[in-house]
Image (cartoon, rainbow, N blue to C red; front, side):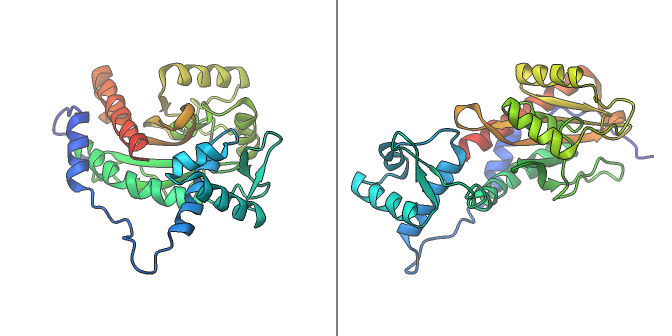
Length: 278
């Protein structure tokens, strides 16, 4: 059994400073082969992907920092090639069947921005930090920074998370629309992993309501015995949630309510930073 050398307190400000000092700008630098038109078209698709409602040409032009003429030309090209469509009000949205066109770009950006902050959080807490993202009908782990401890809670990139049991799954599912929650639960099914897993639909509805009110989720031995995991959603524009960040640890290393609160505060600070940088 690994010895514990003392109680640590998570310091959100320290985490942010560490992330800022460690982060390297590895984004590609435009060169002579860089196409600004293609870049703007991908940005437009990304905005439309992330918005729940259709967007007007003027709004898209403002977001892309383009003139109305340039935005009109870009949108007409995307419409002609089948990537976007107009609704009954003349506003733009992704064309049917194109919902998978931009997540790769968004996901790459999410992971690139998140990993330095995750490394800082693991360095500060010595526990496993994970990032999950919402896909069409599932919630999937997209990045993991493992704890250096021999005895630890682990995670695996690509792992599909139970929306009724894992803290990441619950944190993302709780903030979806009612049909969205149903789709995720129907796709994964409601499984019992331990005696603590929530499987009753009424209890699960109450759990999601509590998560929305407190804006964090906890897995208290619901996925694995003797493990505990805290998760905070990353809020986007209009409070939509497409990702969440978590900290997992063996139950024996959790040292009381004050320690628990400090972990949640650190996760919130990290999630807030991710939201602003995204």
